Amino acid sequence: MTVEKGIRVLAGTMVLVSLALAYWVSLYWLWLTVFVGANLVQSAFTNLCPAEFFLRKLGCSDKDDSQAGGCCCG
Image (cartoon, rainbow, N blue to C red; front, side):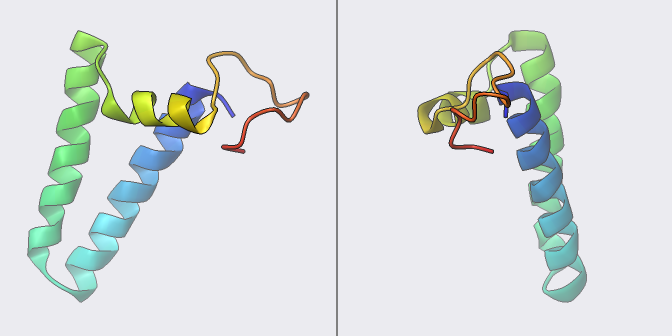
């Protein structure tokens, strides 16, 4: 899995978890959705994404190496 796909999976998962927690626990969990959305917007303009750093540390690469199976992220 590439870093770009990993970021999409992570952001989508965080939004869905946030919505589920807002429905079943507290509406304050919607602030997590706001944070994820704001982070995606700022990363589009600044090219600074904390998730990108952590996914690279986990072994994800910038190129698609799904054929080689060398990434621990997928």
